[in-house]
Length: 125
Image 1: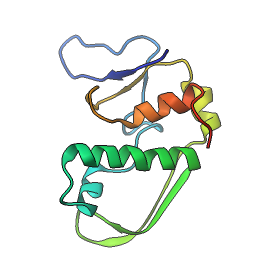
Image 2: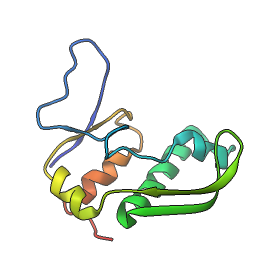
Image 3: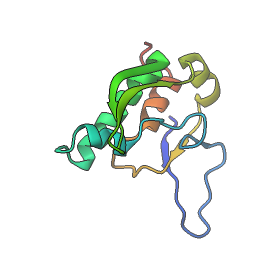
Image 4: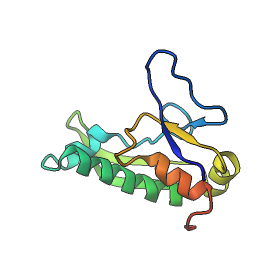
């Protein structure tokens, strides 16, 4: 079963062959910013924010679009935001059977876990 790989900057570390990088700025990166979500919920701890980001990313990945009409940006302004994401068919076509690499620690929530599930036959929309 494909798995998530934590990308590293340590000397001599190489991404395993066949692994696909899914972090920013790749087309598979999560456009939902942790800092912006933390601005919505200042009393929630970092781990809670990470879970919220992954939950919102799952909605985005399953729908292909997520629109929030009153988003609060880290800079303090509010306004609408719409994110778009590749279709589940494209996720499956390009990511199925591959390990996926991101910077997130392996013991924390990550959008790559959602992509692994969707790419490898996880529940449809």
